[in-house]
Picture 1 (cartoon, rainbow, N blue to C red):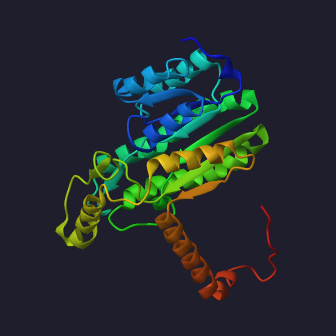
Picture 2 (cartoon, helix red, strand yellow):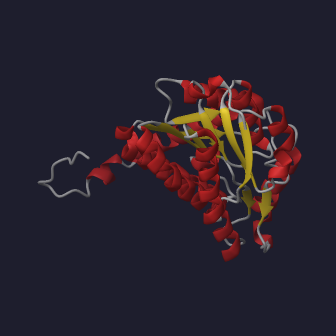
Length: 291
């Protein structure tokens, strides 16, 4: 690969799950802006057309985020090719439909291995490099379901709630090293999430038809009709990364804004309604503890 002279001024991105959806849209947008990209996918041959279009600034490697040796190999490839990693985007993941009583142990563990642990372990691999650089930006793809619980998606929501909590704490851990963390919280976007990237529980409990089956039908009916534009989402993510004061959380889509606002209002109302009970549990001589 013959890197052009813009290499020193452009950012080096490592994005997981680049074959379709948000990952593909973001990969295309990043390269179009003149950045360097280590694009990953479980089937890197699906990225050939993209790499051929940007032979001097793009490289594709295989990455199943659940496999430690492939995570390390992807990071090594980025360093060997571009010399550094400025932006890591943990995008790989999939949806899981099923009420809690319906999902098997294997359903649960695989969802967490991909959606949560894959992001955690890849972040752990990249953090020492970013600390040495004294800068970096980690973008974790969450979801509106990382803040709002949806019936029929309890385990998927759990994986994204976990990503949210980890990211929020991580931001405080790495702030002094010049490393930024941003959570992306999309609503419904016109990607393959409602199709190929949507899994269903192994077992069916008919009592949950009005929840799980209704949820699955909603996803099927919405496929191709989602209001969100992935290309516009990619531009929004780039804008956040390039900002001197990037957001901790970036909701994407009018539906995401509405759902999150409703959730925040619900939490606020609950706190206010039960405030007397909440504060009654302190010792009489207690003082507020700042952390």
